[in-house]
Image 1: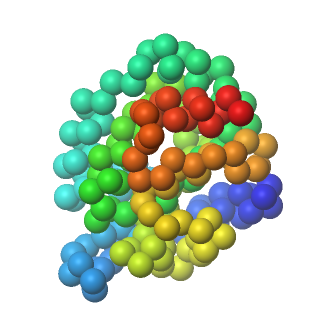
Image 2: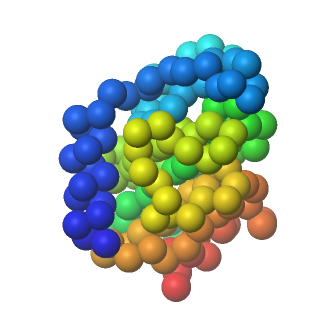
Length: 164
């Protein structure tokens, strides 16, 4: 898994970021492959991104607990800019990461089409069935996921994962 994350990090630097394509199933422009916050802040997805990011207020007590549990944690987010759950949950999750002072260098975001394919980025090893999927790693080992929507809250679910 260490090698996998190193490859993902290195490849993401070599790959084009925020690549757009027209999804033939949707007949609309989407992001595909690796993306960053700047890419998510554009277009139709960007409108939702800004709205959900600005109004989300994570629980302060949980945020404080999360800050203490970030050692050796990396996160991969697989999302669809065409997906309403991604439009809602990804901006909230990114705001949570900002509140807990999570290092963006330990975050990788990958956009997929309706078929859960990420263009020339192979994500088959992550076995993503629904988006968004937030995959949490500690010491290069997957320790948990939040799939589509949280069971309780993003911060509560993330704390549950990081406490194990």
